[in-house]
Length: 287
Image (cartoon, rainbow, N blue to C red; front, side, top):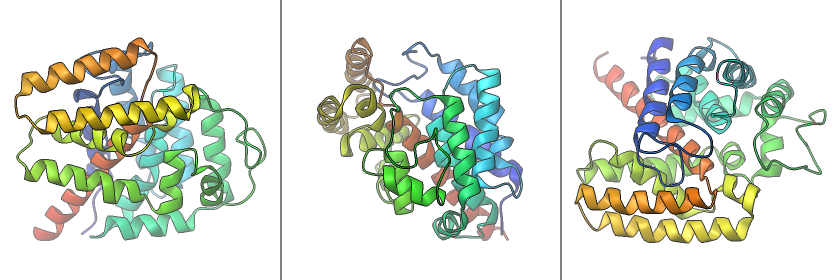
């Protein structure tokens, strides 16, 4: 049994809210704003993009461009480009999935063409993400050549969002969903499964956003610090102690202008995939 557009949109918004509600060191969240952005801007971005990212029968590129356009118009800053790039194909896959979201996602990715590339490049130019730089091949300021997957493959070595397109969202379905499931199985509640997903992403590979703006050496240092923090909070169930540890790390990162934005984007995508999978399971049980 397939999900309705309303169900998919609701799961998307809930995933964005859960990510903002979680204490994610260095990123914007309800405990502390940062990087000249507020939690409210991200919440508003989720609400206003729920419709365009779930446009029935729209391509991935059309969904990304429409969502980026309304974000620029209503919010005035780039709060969600990575989220849109990750969640648009997931939303389209959810639209056609009857049970297996991952297989449906492969079908969506395989069907993308140069029109998706053109629309996504336009969305990237509109969002104007920090530290993007110039690429020798398939630069977003040039006329795109080939499919979106081909363009993403050329960037996968330096960008974790691009890597998802090239690998079938492997970091989401293997790393992110596994971390989320383990947290739930271990009895974590409230924001903690989301925090664990975020720390899993941040501690596994250097954050692309930090690497673009500050270099790979700094990004690797943050990754190592996140690994230590992850081990520390996993050893205790004391909520207050966990929060103190995370807030101290949060303050250090923000004081240095370090924003692990890509890790946050991957967290939203993981929550979205988890929510869709759960809804599909429920729909099939009740069918």
